[in-house]
Image (cartoon, rainbow, N blue to C red; front, top):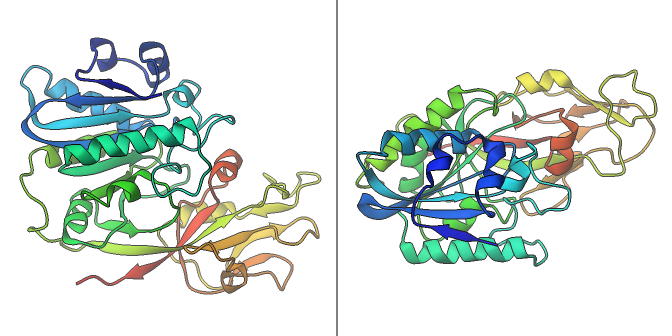
Amino acid sequence: MLNEMQHFPDELYDAEVTELVDILDGPTLFHLEGNEKKPLFISTLLHGNETTGFLAMQRILKKYRDVGLPRSISLFLGNIEAASVNQRHLDSQDDYNRIWPGTRHADSPEKDMMQTVTNIMERRKPFASIDIHNNTGKNPHYACINILNPHGLELASKFSDIAVYFTSPKGVQSLAFSDFCPSLVLECGQSADLSGVDHAASFIDTVLHMDALGKAGHGDLKLYHTIARVTVPVTISMADSEQDPGSDILLNKELEDMNFRQPEVGTLFARKLSDKAGMLTVTSESNEDITDEYLDDSDGDYRIRRPVTLSMFTTNQRAIRQDCVCYFMEELRIG
């Protein structure tokens, strides 16, 4: 499935994200030569409706089109088919950010492709890896890392003053690449917010001019650790309002404004609209069901049982079905 190219075609400099499927034959890995030969790896459009990364790279490549890149770039454009219809992934597809080496997903051509990309880049010994994403819910811009080392912490601190450390879900690009190079995820807010494009492009430009990592420290970086993921079982129907007939549960929309904040214990998480059991599942990083530790439904609704910080909380039903309601986090102290 994978295409490799040694140049960035002229048509791509001004193409809309939805047009990529008409220009490229499929997911494509570009190797673009720069003054520093050790490449910066950048992946984007692993989720087709998360467009900030591609727009930021268009800006970067236009800037250096005539003068040359300060550092070589290997750029992976992922799910361009889903991007053509503004979807995270098509119903017939795997999630492109859950099938990298280390995944628990079944074998597939897409999974083999991600293994191939990983093998190619491991041989090229990247300076660093950056995977660019957007959120569905309302979140600040932040970075994610998978290993707590000076290189990753320094990179994260150059993007934002907040970062998230996580080791689950498995099969994400950053976790696969963290075995052989500093690896970072950029979460750039919602796709429609062009401030995310500005921020991502500025950060990439900064990294292209860096000659070393791990010496500058991480400043006042505030670090969180993802401890749990909240999902809605497929057998449970979600309502958009209390008037929706026949639905099982209604998420508290007010929590969309609480990402990276800590709601008070007892705060409503979701209303029960039927008497079904097990409407929400909270899963630990080791894939254990810990729902009762974090959510209390003794009064008939789901309420937050213990102090926890939210991230990526959304009430978008398609996003929830394809991923989750939110993550629970705790703050980590770093030296």
